[in-house]
Length: 92
Image 1: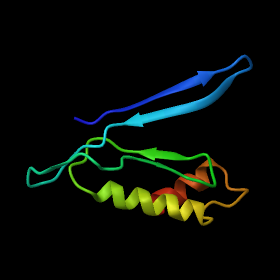
Image 2 (image 1 turned 120 degrees about the vertical axis):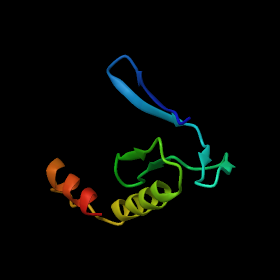
Image 3 (image 1 turned 135 degrees about the vertical axis):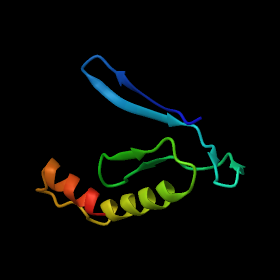
Image 4 (image 1 turned 180 degrees about the vertical axis):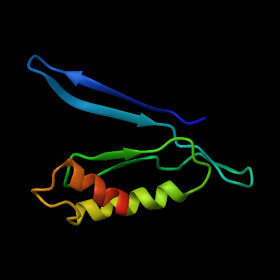
C-alpha cells in the first residue's frame, strides 16, 4: 500500500509552508520488495513537487527524476502560463 500525505503550516499572516510525506516501499513485478524507494521529487529552482502512488515498478522514479532535472535546467520559461507548462510536462 502506498501513502502520500500533505499539510499546510499557517503562521499569523497566512499559509507559510507545505509539508509532503510518503512511504518508500515498492513491490516489483516479481513480488520482491524494496523499502528505500523515492516517491517524492522537488525542484530546486521552482516551487514544484511531484509524487506518485500505486505503481509496482520503477517507471515513475525514472520519469519524475528526469522531469525535475529538466525543470531545474530551464524547461519552463519565465513567461510560461499554466497551460504552457502542462503541455511541456505532458510532452515530456
